[in-house]
Image 1 (cartoon, rainbow, N blue to C red):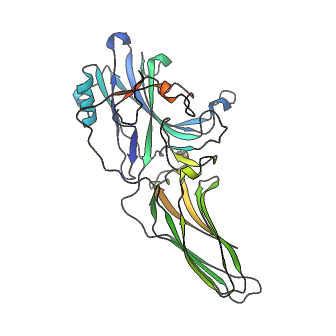
Image 2 (cartoon, rainbow, N blue to C red):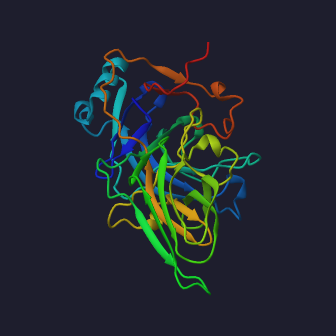
Image 3 (cartoon, rainbow, N blue to C red):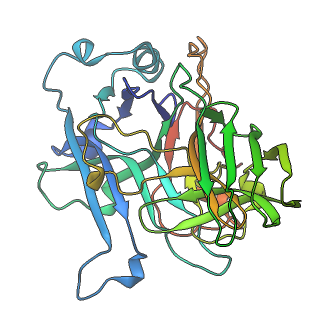
Length: 361
């Protein structure tokens, strides 16, 4: 495969393309199939109860690549496949998948420092296997797997900057407290500073203490703080406060926080805080596995909450180099890395992507 990250641009998703290199003699008459699957794992494998695994298959699509069901040239959909076929020769066969528009993006919940096993996650996998038929029992030694990611990229246009205001009345006070909070824009890329413009007019006879601004990661079940500016500002009775609070939510500051949502991670790569989930119209949230959103909260004697989006920056497509370099991904490269020994999913896989580890000598 030429890459392992496939971009969801809301209105379109990169197709999954690649080739399978086979040895017809070793197959001994068996067929070769390739599957694209999306799995929602909501518990560790060792938590299985009476044979029921804590995982759900959200999507599965299978293609027979050998013997080919059509001319090999008709199965070529991309320039990447054409270059791979020229490089690998006549025993290479192409495969091609398109994501349906109702699938979530890759996301995982960060495990705690002492957690073991696979984390709760939405994952995508390409699997090639040989068998007598598509439904036959598949032997592990006849299977190769490669984890891929579906990543959420930002919309091309910005919406109106989020803004919210409230008026709070106090007992024994004739006049209220007026608070307004505005973000400088709706959409933020990973690593961008969030500017929260806070305007407080305290017409009451109460003193407001300890104004704090918080960025919250939230999903349907729970909320986690990923950044906070606790300024200690106060607004005395009859006074006003106009201030811009700066927040920078980063994974680097939340490494030990169990349950923080992250963009899907390939084992040997770093990642980010999860991008905001952008749900297409008509898609049921129940099939998305893990929903992610971010909220800015101004906390004082009461609270104001407003939402924005955090996403990956849009990428500019680039053509692959004419001279393709092949690198083999070895499990030995992952020794000493957390989660490296979880399974044999990526042993012996071959990819043309730059993200693969060099073959050990």
